[in-house]
Image (cartoon, rainbow, N blue to C red; front, side, top):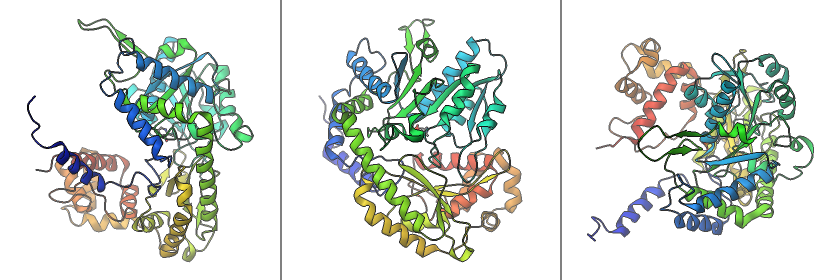
Length: 505
Ligand SMILES: *Cc1c(COP(=O)(O)O)cnc(C)c1O
């Protein structure tokens, strides 16, 4: 064969240099996006399993029978830990978003098949993952968001009840929610939906594989959040989160074969091979599936229980640390290995800690917490801006160092008021003709260059290229996000992400 244009060693060295600039994926310094078991040998096993199936096409498990065997193994494990019986079937998908999209599409098609007329509705608490906004957008459902109580993050069951009519194709609850780790009242809501025959999806994407093994999971609220609740029709749980698999693998379980068949797409209406797809992709990798399968085989229930116990101990320790920090508070009653932190408004302003300044101070010390914006709900109530922490098994070893950093970061910013987004916006807008009024007027009608000009004025886009790096401080960025009309922010964010990956030469 002809030689490579470059030496393999040089190519890999270049990639290693690029990787070195990434946020650290291991060691617990990034408290979102990555889920580190803390077991390098598990990562090694996953990598070897993925490599073994690298050339396989997951599109056709009748040709590549290893895919069928692994998928049956993964679905079987998920069904067992989420207490599904033989009526519960499932698919492995490319991630939480695909699982959520498919749950919505399936429910819509079941609703239509049952005679549903007009535009179907999707009812969910405000805290439901954005993947459901995307699903409603993609599949033509009206999204009806139920406000949650700002102090607990929980929706009122009565408010859900009021919305249930013949146009509701699906109700979604979270176990737990991403923003505040709220365990929604699954059983209470199922008691409403089941008699009406309305589908109920439990989004356990983030926490499912942790909640199933949570200490004392057999007692309290954790007795009733999965298929043990009769009215639950589907459940999603991500293996690339607390299943510790590399990205690209989640499971969607559905109660009742006939319901689940609505998830599929099949056609013989073209001159190529007959198409039958359970999920959204055609050709698909088997690597993430193989990795997840191998991890499940290696850990089994005892291994998951032990890793979950580590994450649970670390979470409890960090919650105690936060509770002792003057000026901060934990939002609501988080369930599982994640939580959000807000300003404690009960103390005088001089003692308050703004969660976004706090996150920036922690980031300067090498700890990446995730900033979440405030949100005004449909009923006018306002959810506070917060900082999110996702805790993984590896965090346990880092708790002493991380706790000290969280305390020091709070001390460094205590009394510093939150950034006034409107004032910042007015100041930055002076850099562009027409100022802030011009910005408001352009709204979502901005073209790509117009949007890029605003991003540059905001200091978010270098004139030539950005290399994808974020600014040092994110609090001002989030304050701007909160101050701008949502449609405009969304347009600017699209531009930012698009420019980050555009070729720079
Ligand atoms: C992560 C997450 C999703 C979406 O999953 P992706 O794997 O990021 O596509 C959906 N719901 C919840 C609650 C999540 O945390």
